[in-house]
Image 1 (cartoon, rainbow, N blue to C red):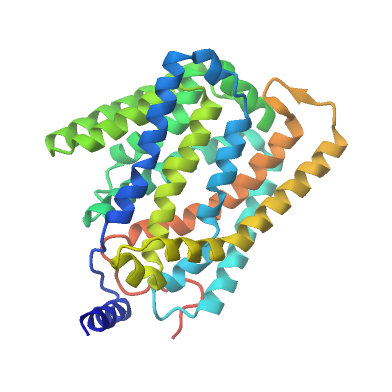
Image 2: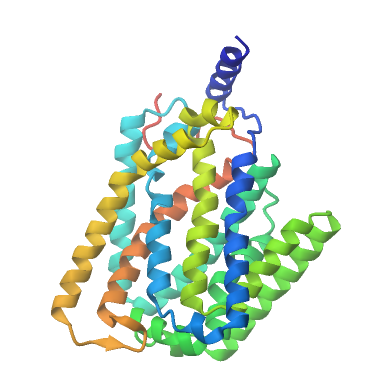
Length: 356
């Protein structure tokens, strides 16, 4: 009887647009994966730097593929967040918006690759940082602080530190994706960006320390240390899969109303199977499309291997164009999710498929 009343209360909460802080065990458990993995890689790099450096670009691609499903259920988020959204209309509307944004991003990249790459990197910093801030707020049942310094502190290391501290490794990748990018990103500009990120990390760490959140200070320290010590392809691949994607999947599991009774009972198996079913088709479709594009680009330039690794420059351009095209609309959906993490107002009119 109590369980039924609780479920009715949650349904009413969704109808009214209010929100009750959820159980946070899942968010906390998933949030440990990234710091643990990056700590292990940092220790490995200190003990055997050559072994970590010999991994090449393969860990980067593996990490990107493992993390790909975290954006595969974006089309379901509007209906999860708002009971007045019609699921089918919302899905169709969001897929059309997704396709349009992705196509526009790819077209812009092909037209002016270096400026688009620079804009994409800035968007990535904001996306990573805001996602971490929102994750911590949801985990702790508090409103997101919205601090620009916190966003920069958590989102800057995966992007800025590799470019500033590992130019010999990163520059060939940048030039393979957008010819001339490494020259456009001047050493002075990289040092300014690095200084801003480190300052933001120090200030954020001191704030966390003053608030007696030593675990957050340690996690932020691990994030900075990993990207300073671990070769970028290995560090970013591990970060994307075990830190960014894992935390976002945990938030999605909490956001899905169909998982509430399982999570309240401490069960994770059925929510994971449900997510796997929801994400399977979009993930397979994205991978199939990517492989088809890679095959096509490889057939036209089989002998264009570069210092970026075992993949041809044309292949890396294709990979970036596709991932950038998927990331731009994904970041927009997540930004909406982030803004509605703590205090969920009435359903916004901007969601596709909202009923009258």
